[in-house]
Image 1 (tube, protein in one colour):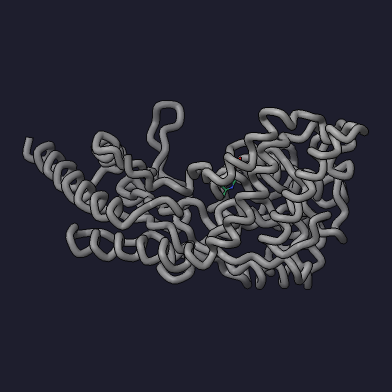
Image 2: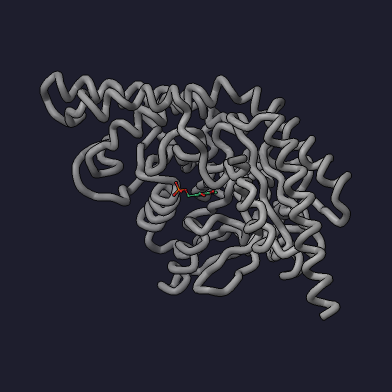
Length: 384
Ligand code: PLP
């Protein structure tokens, strides 16, 4: 298998698994218990908190462990809405992950007003339009750090400065950015940031919501007094310890992500474009994650390509998704102004720590053959 879908999820790093195992075996104490068997686990959680804080440059007390990126996203928005119930306006973009998109759509049905910011053909925002969209009754601005489909990076520091000037709460979904690009929350301009373990070689089902120490916060999960009363529920101790270790490793691998992984992605794109005609990159080629290649492959149906690639063991994602039996072109590519046809002819390849140059070379050859087959079949259909 050649796994080129690291934006969907990543393999658990063996060092992460090793760090977790004691908490799945002998260290099963409840970290909230008063005796030392529990307190030892609580200390491991605190260490994980420090490791995550160190990766994003914030105070460990600002880290709240959650069950996933989706929970973190939902918690940030729901908290902002509770802080001031008179504010019923939300600003977000048309290219967010469904964890924000669907939540905003649900809130719209409940009477909230949503300003959906457009992106241009490069996948970038118009910051003047953002500034104009913020109103006195805006409860929160939520914009992603890196797009999961194209890898396009929004200028989060500039956006945070605009929100600060406008005195609006700002949340960023940084699920795809953390561990891939440097993140420094030291300025304090961002109120909330979401991240997810399984995108950075920790297990699935653990995430973090960074809550700025000056931000007012209302818990989403109400129950026990875990996480300083910011998130009820017994800690997922092994996964939290794993996320801490993954954060430590991500900090060590950041430079690599920007050189080895980026070089791998760049070589993949260059060689694919040299060997296969009619390929275009979706998303700003410079302002994007170092690991993501989203390619429009003229005249090729991505679902057919995915099947052929899968037969040869290559895992990647299509620019369209099957919902209720129908092929839905990607909302991100559509928002960038691309035709349904281009969206349906797009594939995302996302590279990572465990990919090798050998795999990249093999994947290029496999893709070339698959595109030839799909295009040939199309011509056959047309002739018939
Ligand atoms: N936000 C973005 C940008 C994502 O890519 C994802 C996962 O694909 C999520 C949020 C959701 O994270 P999780 O799978 O941990 O709920």
